[in-house]
Length: 414
Image 1 (cartoon, one colour):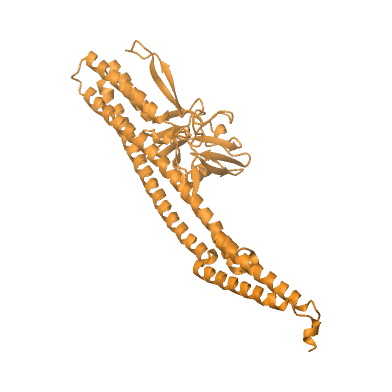
Image 2 (cartoon, one colour; image 1 turned 90 degrees about the horizontal axis):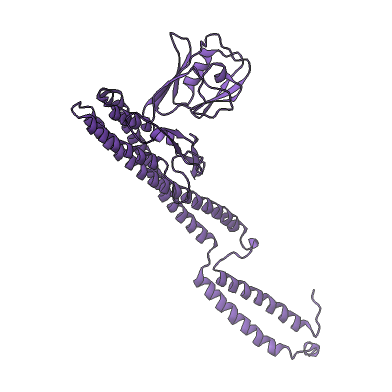
């Protein structure tokens, strides 16, 4: 029940005017911001959808950026690898020429000079740095120089030449998320990209009596393998062979030592993460030594890098040893070419996958943007019509109020 007083008309008009002004202000804010929802209470369900859509859109944009970064990286790396492949093809031509046995010692020394320059070019490519200042072939240690060269005196040369090339990076892979819980693993390890032959490690210690005294963990080619107390060498061989490592383990039939062979052209990295299993077997030195230069003193190794193959060719040319060139050296160069070709194909495949993810994420982001627009954007035609109607109503209210303000309580008693 309402009380009739002289202020009734004024209060009713003022209340309705404030309500109309609030509605008019709201629609003006909607038009100014181009958003239908100004507060959560305007449409709670649509507001909830908008929060989820915007969060998903942000993730899609990040995934697209990640894939684009990888795509650019693959293009850079493939350029240097392709150039290195051209270098190796020229090295092979010189190797075939030097293996003919019809050239003089001076001719072979001249060939060695070109091979040495090609070796420098190969090292330069391996030490390539991207526009962000990161090493392209140092694994995850992107701030270090991938390869160091050691100069020495080589028979047949009057100046110091590259005697060996040592790797400073690691073999860890980078996992980049390119979709919801989907990752692309990138292998930037130069010691795999620029390796030529399968590596074989021959232990120098009888391992038949070995038994793990405690639980431990070893890492073989970047893959962790758990060793349980009481395991013998045969159990260890089975665990290595059943792991994801690209390495096969065997027991030498003559020395009964543990032997390891890579399944493709790569250098084998061995570490004792917990315990000292590999150290006890004589395969590696103590844990203070860093792989891959931590092999035990009695261990024999075969299989080298592309740098080793080119160095061997240069040294054989300087020595006039055409028989070595036509046999072991040429074979190592051919394997290096095969491995580098495989790496280029792998990089190209990863590039294509990254590009497909860029396109898919871009299309997904466009669709999500459409959903956001559907839920949150303002219908300008309807908003303009509503604003005009509210303005007309507001003016009519003001006109009516002007006539009502002259009324008093006596008007109701007549």
